[in-house]
Length: 460
Image (cartoon, rainbow, N blue to C red; front, side, top):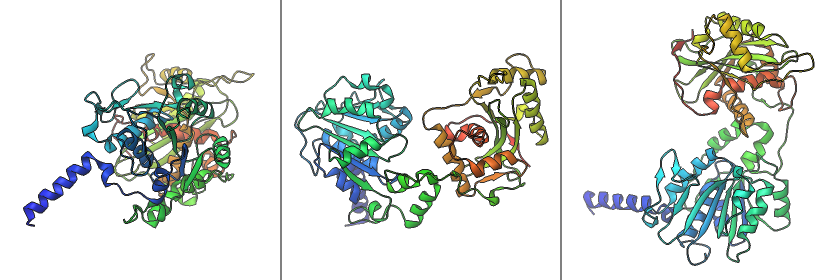
C-alpha cells in the first residue's frame, strides 16, 4: 500500500469513528461490568474520572439504536430519560451525548447547539425510527417527572429519594425496562440507596480510581499512577474516599483545609507586571468578627488561577458608614481605589439580632456612595449578592483547597483572622466560617466559570 492509499484509509477510519464512535470503543473493567449487567436496576458507583458518565450514555445510545453488544433490548422505538441534578451538569452531559450519537440515525429535527445543548425547553434527541431521549433535571420536582412510561432511565449522580419513587413507577412496570445509575456518593444523602443495594434491589458495581479500572481491554491506561495521585490530592479530606474510591462513607476530619500551612503565608505580592482581577468578598453578621471582608487578587494569566489574599477587614455590629470606611481603608493600604475593583460580592442581607445588627449590600452601597461622594446608584462596581446554588459552598472550598495543594495560593500575614479561619474551618456554623465565606464570595469569577471584562490593574 502506498502512502496515498494509507492516508485515504486513515481518513476513512477517522470518518467512521466520528460517525459511529461506539463501534470503536474499548471499555474498562468497571464500564464493562455495568454495560453487560442485564439486571433491572444497575449502579456504577465510582470515583470521579473513572468513566461513569461515558458508560451510562453508551447504554442509552445502544438501546436507542438497538445495537447493544451485551444485552438484548426491546424492539421498536425507545423512550428514554436522562436525569441530571442541574442544568449546569445537563450541559456537560448533552455535550458528551452528542459526541457519542450516530448522526446518520438522527431525525432531521434534532439540533445540537455547542454551548447550549439540544434544542427545546426540555432538550430532546429524536431518532429516525421514533426513539426519543429527553434530558431532565431532578430539580424539576416529582410532578414534572410523573407523566410518561419509559423503557430506560439513566440517572447521573445521586437522585433525591422522593424522585426515585416516581422513576421506579414510570420504568419498572415494563418487563424489559431498566434503570442505570452512574454516580459518586456525594452531594446528597445516599443511605437509602445503599440499603437498596444491600437488599439486592439494585446491583452495585463499585469502581475506585485505580490503574486497572482506567485501562481499556487490550489497551494502555488512560491515566498514570502519578495523575491518579495528583487527582486524589486535590479532593477535600472530608470526601476524598468517596471521590477517589466511590466509598459510601467518608471520614469527616475536624479540619477542612488540611493542605494549608506556613508555606502559604507570604508578603510577596502577585508577580510584578501581570494583570490580575482584584475582588472583594464580604460576609454579613452582628457577632464579633462576623462582619468581614477580604481583598483578593486572582491571577489568571497562565493556566489555573493563582489566588492571593492581600488584606482583610473584620468587625462586629456597627452602622454601615463604619463598615464602608473600613473597606475603603483596606483598599488604600494596598494602593487601590474602589474603582480598581473588578468585582465585589456580598452575602445576602443579615436580619440582625435583638439590638439591631442589620446589614445588607444595599445599606452598605449607600454608605459607600456617601463616603465616595457618588450619586445614588453610581457605585462602580456595584456590590453583587452572593450566588448560592446547591453545592456552592463545597465548590468554593474545593477551589481554595486545590489552589493550596498545587501551590497556587498565598495569603498575607496581616490577614490574621482569615489565617486562623483557614487553620480551623470544618464546615460548621461557627466563628471560623465567616472569613472562609467571604473568601468564597471573592472567588466567584473562578467558581462560576464565567468571563468578565476586568479593569487592567498591575499589582506590584
